[in-house]
Amino acid sequence: MAVPELGTDRATLSLWHVRAGDRVYDGDRVAEVLIPGAVVDVPSPAAGVLGDWLARPGEPVAPGQVIGSVEEE
Image (cartoon, rainbow, N blue to C red):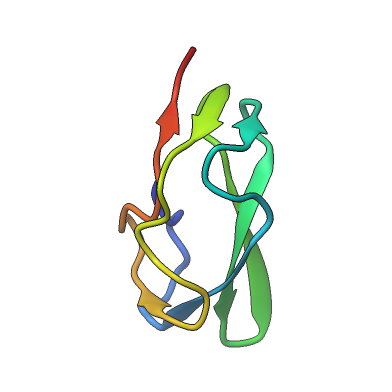
């Protein structure tokens, strides 16, 4: 899963709503990204099991950056 287009290149991964190994469904809110003046949800791109986090809370992220994966079942 990737950070959505944000209209800015300044963003920080705020938090994960799920942990690696948790079941998720298509469109579930799995993470939050902070941009100046707003919080943007990162949705799951598919149903399955969340793989390892590729970014940690507090780390800077960019639009299109892959921050995790969903292993479809």
